[in-house]
Length: 330
Image (tube, rainbow, N blue to C red; front, side):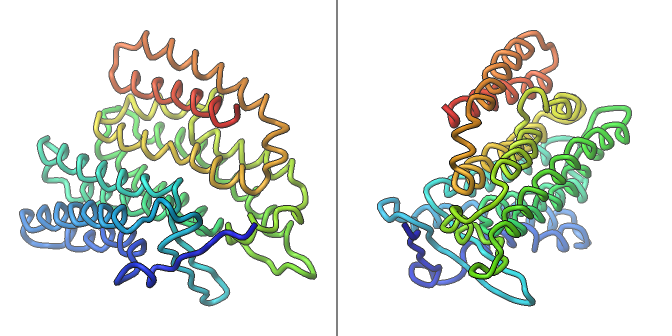
């Protein structure tokens, strides 16, 4: 069954999803270069606040009774595809990213980091990237956003971290996320080239792959690579080693921001694995549920034993990831 598509110009006066994605990023030059720091802070709060208001407008425009994709923007240029849209699954992640961004800015303004323009700019960049990730409907577009995500994450770890060995932390993060990026890229390439043939041109558009998934090849390999890549990002036991170390060296607010970002792993499973390789996901659900149950109790037990709030949040997130994986594969 074909998915219904409703384009942005059918309900909105401007391309709302692109605006929400770019708005925080467009404020970064002013934050960095404005002579007056008060003006830079006003620009940051104004941009983040406007993003939150526009995300409320997005919720207002979204028709929950209408199936399919809404507010879609699809542009082909230079052999590439820009494809964004919302449905009942990703619609709430966008205002959540805007709200967390505004809360993180508020926290920073009340601490000794208040004068750090680079830190404020990194928060704005992270908000922009999360928005782009959650509304991306092209596999390569989604993957490129995850690569860009490393920039503000590393900067926030160094600038707002409390650890004495930031280079060691960045090395641990790059080690885990590098494997995650490699696994997801391999899975996405297998999907795109697996569909390509005489009757199907090469495409990484999510909707094209979803509606033609019966013609895909190497579904088991696709599942293994994508699940492995997203399991690191969740993070799911036993691929969780990066989060407690990173959380312990960060501030509470920034740790909360990271924990929202790691939910991209769960999002990736539901957005890409279930619709694109549903048969393999069903056949391998027992393995995912086993890892989820182990992670659920492992994370909860270690969270109770922590005396550091940031590590407690990290292990709680690991436990929560196990609960979610068990639930979605059940």
